[in-house]
Image (cartoon, rainbow, N blue to C red; front, top):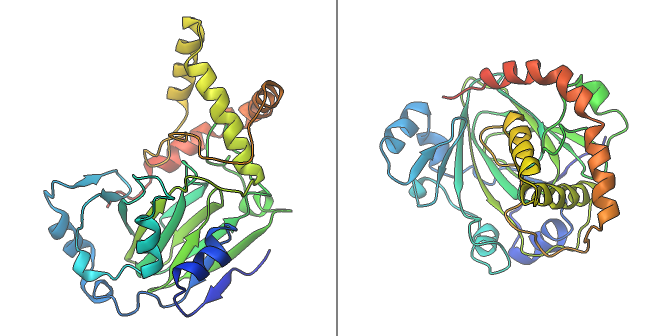
Length: 297
């Protein structure tokens, strides 16, 4: 277990990229949003009224997503994040806002975000307990997916490199690509907003990123296989796997990276993924029960 890097001053773009963004290391910025009007103005009722029938906001079940400014006067996007989102070094669709509104005890199970996403999240209201797990000590996942088998947390984290901390009102958290995370809402009303972006290139090759490149190579090969029976069987298997919050499972395209898997690496990945099938079959009922309890406020 390690302590997450915590700072109390807002970094400029150069400092953020040098210390956190490029090496892909998490950071907690205390009190960044303390002066945002949203801290005082936002609540479940106010957000419902503001987002009601808004043509640019889509309800994704567990969060709202917008690609145009909504309630923009209530927040102050830090300059380093503005620069990143406007950069030609990130993919062009990396600008969506997400609003998360949760009640006390709402929990997201361990997963990492797909599409090699970097996540910037701000705790506008309430408090959440977070756990981040390094992608170099990966957790056991459902085959070909980005979320973990449901297991006792103490056993799951044994011999892993992880940090545990509270994200309090006004705090900003940077979650780098492929870092597993789970969060538990600790207050009656908990509101987060986040932005995600995918870099066009990276020099960081973690164990989980390598796995993702291999599994996406395999999935693309099966999806486009010359035999129809293989393509149909693949579609059925993917359709049977539980989804988390409607989030997809694959990179939209390969980003530039230092790794290109060969046939042997893809074959080895296939066997490694299949080793988790027994665990998947045993825990699927628990997963379905958990997903039904997701707070859709």
